[in-house]
Structures are given as structure tokens and as C-alpha cells.
Length: 122
Image (tube, rainbow, N blue to C red; front, top):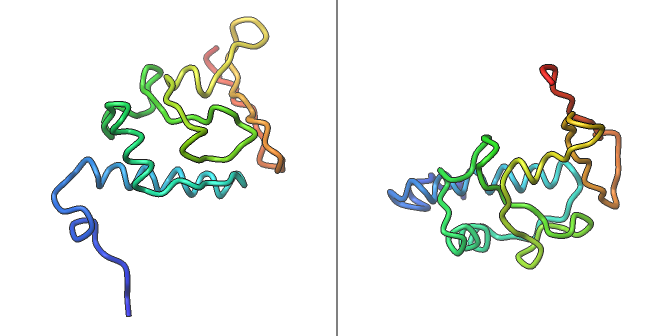
């Protein structure tokens, strides 16, 4: 028996919930890929965005978009260890003058997936 349900059956016509569920699934998969504990349920994830007054359209890839981040990067993703920050503050720090490099979040399970982002146009 197939237990999967369509988004419409799960969330009705609430487009924001459908978009947030997709973002939640991506976040959960990324945490698994980077060997980070992810203890957030969809309800907790969605409610955190609601409390912050954000919708799925408020997050994104622009520098001024708000993204969920961990307060302590050595701990996993749980409701007590998350906050919302501007994307420019979450992903990048100024190192070596004006060049921007992606921050390597120091987790206990360091592996070969480490990389440093170096923009070509800077």
C-alpha cells in the first residue's frame, strides 16, 4: 500500500505550506548530507517561520533574504538552536581583505566534502 499523499491532500490549497514543506525537505536532506543532526519536525519548522513573521517567499538566494541558521554550529538543528539571519551574514565572512569566502561550519563529523567558495569576479 502506498502511504505517500499528494501535497494537495496533505495541505489543501495553502501554497505557502506547500512551499515551506519543500524547503523543509531540502533542509533535512542537506543536514543528512553534511552529517548534521536534524531534529525539527515540519510543524516546528513551519511554526518557527510563522513566529518570525516570514513566508516561503521571504527566504531565498539574495543577500538580504532571511535564512534559518544554527546558533551554535557544533550542535544539530533543533528548535532551541535556530535563528533567522540575513543570507549575507549566514554564508559568508570577510577574510583576506575584501575577498569573500564561504564559512566552513565546524562540525564533529568533518569529511572530504569541505570546500571554500571563491567568486571569480572578486
